[in-house]
Length: 264
Image (cartoon, rainbow, N blue to C red):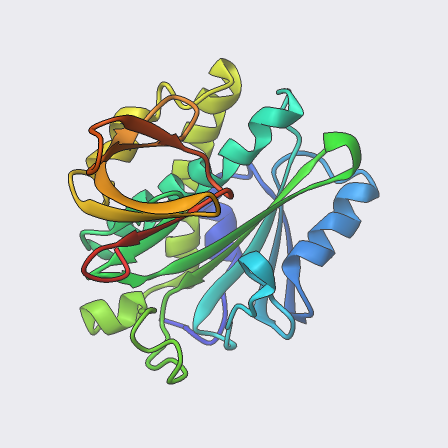
């Protein structure tokens, strides 16, 4: 198996030509590259892939590590026919697809830490950054998958892992990418059809790492502890407060959710 970079021929076959694939060995950021393509008219399901990113970014501006030949760095161009206020839910759609795809590709019990972190054994396997174009005319969904990394920087070693570190085996980058994108197509079409996550809730909650667990909600208006119950069709985390028993609906992006006994 060639693991020096992603095998585009293998990926094209796995995806049956449903994606318009663009590939480079190295870019500054696949999200920036994809945004340029989308602005120039790239159709929905255009896929921008790089073997290495020099300036990949995660949420809140954090740098996303993507060493050459060990990870998947990709950005999707989407043009969903839904109201702009519903577009943030795409992050959960992608998170579910990443967890399900990596779970199937590596035969690992990958879970989701709400809202969109794919995790295994309490450590993160992927990063997702979704950005909207002007007036919501397109959405760029950037994804980084930790596939064949054998080590992480000291500051990430207790928070991040890879399929290789968890299984002891190298994995085809193309096969992992295809598994994630195939899952994404299924969930994306259901999401766009309904305008919510109603058809995804069952699959999402089945692998939700937080479900039934104690969590601490870090809200700018005040912190509190509770138990995560699941999500609603808008993707909000339902939390039963320990102090009052009241059910709170937590919006992604507004608060942070932490496990009482660790990252999850």
